[in-house]
Structures are given as structure tokens and as C-alpha cells.
Image (cartoon, rainbow, N blue to C red):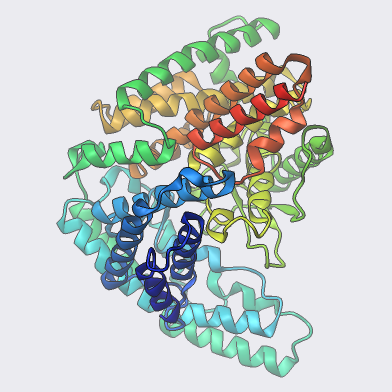
Length: 571
């Protein structure tokens, strides 16, 4: 609370002391960061009361008003970027409050309750164990607050459609266990670090068992009752967000945020269809290369069913992913000037969330953490995890994709404001991830025609997202039509297509970021190659893409245009 009050004082003092625009901006950034960093010890998992959301919106509104009074025409490059990014994140904060997104903290593959699994980490010290125990004790209040918000959302017609909840009971039923020892949230206490005495271990385990039995399991029973007795009977019938109150305006706001560009649903839908057509021609060329006698659909059916393309055990799938990851590590110095200090590991998606989870994901950690980043590989339902897709998935989620970009972002010099070092925008981050699948081809990672087809099917997957996301949320597409479109055009398994379509239904607009961001990065690279010719340096180009951290796509374009101009002037 002290930091919040300090932030308000800083905001109110803007313009009172004849400060320069740079000094005024620095004060606003400090105020914003103080607000973001303010943690109430009474809420170890965060305060999700309506009052907290109101206070945040009021603060951001005041900050935005002050920001608009600053004249940025004298700013240098970094201040200009900071100004525009602060304006962008404040606008998004106010939009989210306007559309009451906090009343709908549920996705098909995630939710307020399942996100708690990210708190489960190995306990490396007594302090870490006590902090984790404190978080377990906070779960009942956390769930109570979230449940209250969800009920408000249902009354406002904001509930998710019932169709996305097939199998959703796994996200809470598995945490309602007969004993504490069988509970996933107790698992870190099964292997406490050796520096702790046996007496300390016994004490921590006893306390943890009591919390799990008396607080955590009853809390998940309340989650079960909330979904099965309150939520499912009151879900909305339509799958498109445009059919909800203020849905069309909300979807346009999601386009604006997730693409960081001014685009219409119609423009995005057509761009997706164009990309699908272009990529399909490249797929047809691979069919000729492998001398397959049949259509693309028949080739995809072959890829989905032939055992040669699938691991027989979770360990085999993980070993394959680690092998590809190491091959990518080897190539990094040839393509990048700056590499991150933080390493990453390859691990399975936790069983607690795997059934409804995507094929893989990257999880970063804070710069201060002793934990590495993690590239998660989903080993659930092995017949839906083709080996030929692992090179693309690994490049995207590990290196040179999310781990490299995310770790470098956190390791930016301290002269870059903290809010930028912690910032993630999907158009930039996911656009970069998809671009690196293309880059992995230059790194020599795709070694068979089937892996090349895997790369194309991943690219096609993101192109199809432009079509099906806008199709369902704006143009009245049914869920089945979206599934059929993806099944016809990609080699993704039917299981994965279904989990993906449910994700797009529950998270409008986010899926647009990948292809839109990748297209912009590839467009900028083509421009730089054309303008610079033999002076083009791939390592320097990537340095310019990454050196300022997360950017909107217009800001990224400014960076590359400046790089081209400066390089040409030096010759």
C-alpha cells in the first residue's frame, strides 16, 4: 500500500516543478512500476477482490491522463519506446476493466484453479517450503474471490460455452484425493532438501498434510460444485464472442491488442485464406518429393496413423525433443550476437493439466530465480504427438524462440525500465516464435521431407487460426466447421485440433498474434535483405529485432527501418 500511495503522489506531482518531459515520463514509469510491484502479504496469491480491480482501473486512468499531457517530441529512442509502450499497456488495462475480463478467468486449457499448478516447484530451502506452505493456505480465499467474480460474469452473460468443457472435470477432480500424500500439491514436500534436519522435514510435512486435508481439498470440492452446479447449467449457447453483450466491440479490442495493429476481422480472415493457399502449394511439392500417390488429405491421414511417426513411450518423445533442442543450441552463435545467460530444461507437461493442454509451452522464470526456464512437452496421448512436428515445436518454444527471446528480454540493461523487461506482447513474442520455425530451416534442423511437412503444417496451423478465429467470433462459423477446416488443411492430430479450437473459442483474438507477427518480421527481413544486399548480416538483423525487448509491431518496424538507414549511410 505504501508503494501505491507513493505512486499517486508521483502522479499528482507531474508538471508541478517545471520538469523536462523526460523527467515527467520517468516519474510516471516509476509510479506504474511501484503499483505493479506492490504485493499485499495478506494475499500471497494476489488480491482478486472487485475493489482491487476498481483501484487498478482508477490508477491506470489517472496515469494515462497524466501521460497524455507530456509532449514526447524531444524524446530519444528509448524514451520514445517507453512512452508508447506505457501508453499501450495502460490502454489495455482500461479496456480489460471496461469489458470486465476479470469476471471470466476461465479458458478451455487453463483457469483460475488450474493456474495454481504453476506454483508447484521443487523446494530447495526451508524458506521456499514455508513460502509455498503460505500459498497453499491462501488457496481457499483465492478460490472464494474468483468464484464471486465468476458468478458476476454469469449474470452478465459472459460465461464460456459448454462445448469447451468436455473433460474439464479432470482439472479439479484429481485434486480431491483421499489422502494428502496422493495430492499433487503435496508432492514438493515428498522430497525436501537434505540441508533440512529430519525434525524440520517432519514438521513441514505435518503442516502441509494438515493444510492439504483441511483447506486445499475442501477448496477443490467447492470448485467442483461451482462448475457442476452453477457454471455448466448457465453457460452461453453461442460460441462466437460477437453474440455476447458488447461482443463485437470486445473482439475488435482483442484484435487491436493481440496484433498491435489497426486491422479489421475481414482483413485478417482474407489474409488467413491467402496464406492457407500459399502454404498448401508448398505442401503439394513435398507430396511429389516423397512420391505419394494421393491427395493432401490422404497424405495427412497417412501421417496421422502410421506408427513410424509416433513415440512409443513418453521418455522417447522427451529424448527426441531434447536431441532437437541440443542441435538448435549448437547453431545459435551463427545467427545471434547476444545469447541469454539463463539456461532452459526440457520437461513433460504436468499430468495434472496435460489432458486439456496444448502440445508444448515455454515457462520462464524471474532473473533472480535459481530455476531455469522450461520447455514443456506434452506426453499425454502419444498418438496425438507426431515426431515430425517436434523440430518446429522445439524451435518455437525453446531456442531460438521463446526461451531465447524471453530470457534476453529479462536480461536487458537496467537502463530499460522494469515494466519493459517484464512485458510480453503476443504479436512480438509469438510472432518471433513462429518466425524461428522458419529460421530453423536455415539452421538445418529439418532433415526429412516429413519434418519439412511438419514445419509447413505448423505454419498452416497458424494461418488457419486467422480464418477460424475470425470465422467463429465474427462470421458465424460453427465449432464443427472450424474443426473441419483445420483437419482438412493441417496434419495436426484430431485430438490436438479439438483442444486448439476450444482454446480459440475461450480466448478470442489471441490466436491471431502468431501469424500476424511472423508475417511482419519476415516482411521486415525481406526489406532489409533487399535494401542492404551483400551488407545484410543475419546476426545484426536479429540483434535489432531483440535488443530493445518486447515491442509493438509498429515500433519494431521503426527499429528495422532505422537499422537499414543507418547501415546504408555507413557505406
